[in-house]
Image (cartoon, rainbow, N blue to C red; front, top):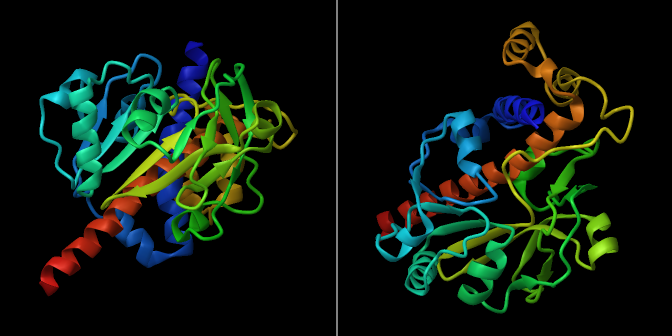
Length: 295
């Protein structure tokens, strides 16, 4: 398990750097905007089964770590982004009310797996719910729906074959409100086995947004299903980027060859999702600033 952790930690560091380079290759203006400091405070709620803060540590992202019971005691700034790790059952009723108000006023909320039952269903009813068919521990193929999303479209290409780890007893997402819920990632394998295809979804709520994903963000792992997946992590970077000597040496120093292609591709896919949340919030803040200036 320690070997898997080390490989995936390296894969996440590499993936974050690859996202920056990929944006530079396809859209210089977007890349410049992406590189600007994040103006939103990041709050992470501790979990027992998911640890997104460890990914943030690896990529050097600053955040405030709190215990779930603190949501009833603190004021949440709507300009912030809140990440709630699975399972989130320790959030109190008052804390949940504060979270809902936070989103209504413009806050962005990201939750994982069992938080679907403890946060999303009671706090934001009528959008998505658990379908009561827990998963096995397995890795499935996913499809990132980037057609109408400029940010994801810049990062994900037609040759990508990403995978998603479902930890045992993950909660499949049933989309109740098909009109207002956008599915950003889906899986035909999950749909075939558990009746629902959604992997990562989002919906607007008040002035804010809610994002939810099945399973856990930290240490998403992969399987080497094909000959392509068994290639080196460097070969994936070479496949995705306009590689030159500087970049080659940079990624080698980062330890890219310690992970195989499937590891880096899995980390790149999930990191693209995470960065989409920051991107969406950044655009949201820009629009808010423009509105304030007009007033």
